[in-house]
Length: 242
Image (cartoon, rainbow, N blue to C red; front, side):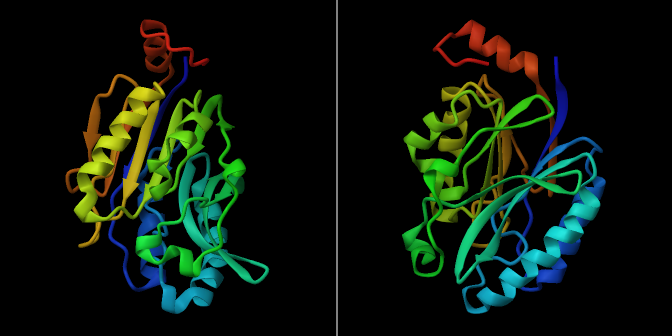
C-alpha cells in the first residue's frame, strides 16, 4: 500500500514576486523529499491585475526555478499564464523538473473581478492524473463550489485545492473542503493564502472526514495512506472505484 507525505501551505502573498518565489522555494526545500505539496492560488504574484503582463512573464521564470528545486516532490500551485494574447489562471503540477499536469481555471469568480481579466479554461480539462500510483485531481478555489466538478473528479485519491478564499466566507471553505473529502471518499489538501482578506484555513482532510488545519503553521504535514482510502470505500460502498 502506498504511503506518502502530504503538505498544505498557508502563506501570505507579498507584493514582491521574487520574495514570494524565494519563500516557496524555501518551503519546498524543507518538505520531505517525496512529498505532495499544495500552495495557495496565484501564490507567486497575487492577482496583480495592474501588473498582469509582468506577472505572466514572471511565471515563466518561476516555473524554471521551481523545476530545478522540486526533485522527487510533487508541487501543485497556480500562476498567471499568458497563452497567445490571453491570460489564464493555470494550475501546475511539477515533478522531477517537468509539468506533469496543467489546467486553466474554468470557473472564474466574478465578485473578485476575475471575469474581467482572465480567459475561461475548459471544464473538460479538469481531469484526473496519476502520480506514483496515486490518482490526483485539482479544483482551483471557486471551482470547489460546483458539484458537477466533484463528480468529474470522483475516484481521485487526493484532490488539491489551491485557493485565495475570501475571509468573510471562511465557513464555506471549511464546510466544502470537509464535505468533498467525505463525499468523494478521498484526501483533500487545501491551501489558502494567509492574507488579511483570505480565510487562511488551509488543511488536510482524510476520507473519514478527520481534518487537520494549519492554525498559523506555514506548512502542515500529514500522510496519505492508500489503505485509508480503500478502507473507507469498502466500509461505505457508494460505488466509487479505487
